[in-house]
Amino acid sequence: MSEAHTFHPTVLREYDIRGIVGSTLTAADARAVGRAFGTVVARSGGKTVCVGYDGRLSSPELEAAMVEGLVACGLHVLRIGLGPTPMLYFATRDREAAAGIMITGSHNPPDYNGIKMMLGKGPVYGQQILDLGIIAAKADYVSGEGSSEQVDVKDAYVDRMMRDYDGTRDLTIAWDAGNGASGEILRRLTAKLPGKHILLFDEIDGNFPNHHPDPTVEKNLVDLKKAVAENGCDIGIGFDGDGDRIGAIDHLGRVVWGDQLVAIYAADVLKNHPGATIIADVKASQTLFDEIAKLGGNPLMWKTGHSLLKAKMAETGSPLAGEMSGHIFFADKWYGFDDALYCAVRLIGLVSKLNQPLSELRDRLPPVVNTPETRFQVSEERKFQVVQEVKARLKAEGADVNDIDGVRVKTADGWWLLRASNTQDVLVARAESGTPEGLERLKGMVVAQLEASGLQAPSFEDGGSAH
Image (cartoon, rainbow, N blue to C red):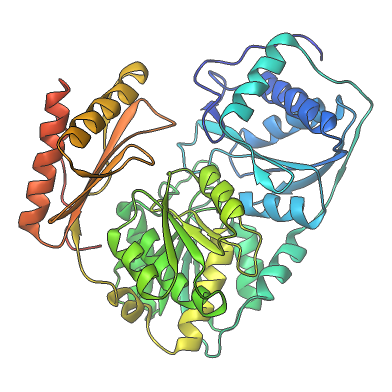
């Protein structure tokens, strides 16, 4: 149990640990993470760690190996079993554990899996994850005789969410769990929520037989849109594979994107926290930041990445933050972590008590035309260099540049973004304008900058007026 261990070079990522099961990620890796992370916890004075796992076929084996590693460090492990990632976050806070570990592949294909961690109340990311590789490579572990026990937090988790439900009229809701880890909790939650509930794909199945569990990709929402139309639903709600990202559909069958949801939530949250800082990532629409300011809040644009937004929320005391990708974080009444089930409870309550359809809340924001995220491959060594080259040229030209995460350039036509992904060997580009003609000009600016750095420009696809 104490031998040195080396991880595949692609596994230790910016926000989590992730790989292809049996190839780049194995039970031996999970055991080594347990030993290395357990060592960090023990050296910081921690005694107890919560561990959970998602519905992937490989998750039980990885969870068992992880527990072995933690117990070998002398820690007491609370095994909360199968469920969504936010249930693990909740258990860690509710049981006042020193740390939490989730075995999950999130929204990746079925042959992937991974590990998300929290230490104290905060996320583990960046250098903290790389440090685990160093500890394992040196076998610099603490040792002890630990223990583990099974604990059931499902009812406590559902009851805590229900405490914040404030709806005043019954709604009809369609839900799509995507055969992900949220299924059982969703059944328990909808049994307590008022109104009528239509559940799709709530059987947990790591093969994801119906569609890929990523509600931010519109083709994965076809079944949900159909259920909304056929049942006359007020709202449709979808989850990703581990339940920390939300997707929503209004009664007209239109997607309500992550940044639009943050704008809707912000109007409610700012009533209780006037002037508060509301955070969104650099990929979010300018209409969101403008709306937060209009509502009397302090809009803050921050780096993309759920761990980075959580850390910034804690630093600024922000009651609400969100990403385009559907990670939305409530510190207003909740714990500041990304929880799609809780976000759903808040959304249903909001629509119910305002006595307005979700479509009206969505349409308060001015319409814009945009591109989806466009990704194209660039080597790990080159991707950051290209962004630096683009930034230098733009600043020399006197452009209006926000360089908090890549370059986000504001012009009379709108804005465009170019950033290096922290998790893949790709550059990500996006553009948004008030007019189709303006969008074409913005796309042309992105193409020109990429070509100036010797790269073939990506093929943009218009996002239409969906945003």
